[in-house]
Length: 140
Image 1 (spheres, rainbow, N blue to C red):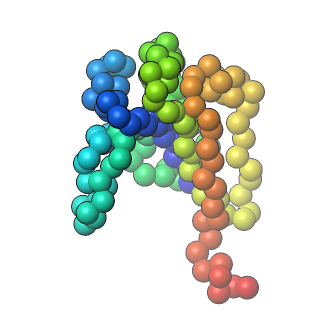
Image 2 (image 1 turned 90 degrees about the vertical axis):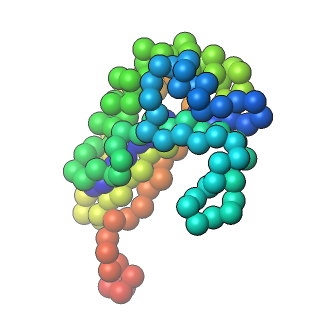
């Protein structure tokens, strides 16, 4: 199983990622501002800002999905009131979770305590789930 979790705050108009960093006092894993390039080779520009705090730089192997979420919660729970202020000011929040699993692996489990912790902070829970089996297409 491979997992990763990212808490995202997105905004448009006058909202900035720099304001989020200043208010929270937490350095993001990634951030972008309105008008910055979307990619190195793209002429497209971001229409809004984004502030992202990720559990890891890339998906981690052999880590249950609860672990990266708990890590993010440990960092964000102390600033819960400020996160809600940002959402009330027009930022949009979500928890984007990545889960790659082989067919023979077990299901991902999020216990009630973890879900209760998530509910105290803004943002919906998004699960990006995919099969991690290489060559599966050719085996059919």
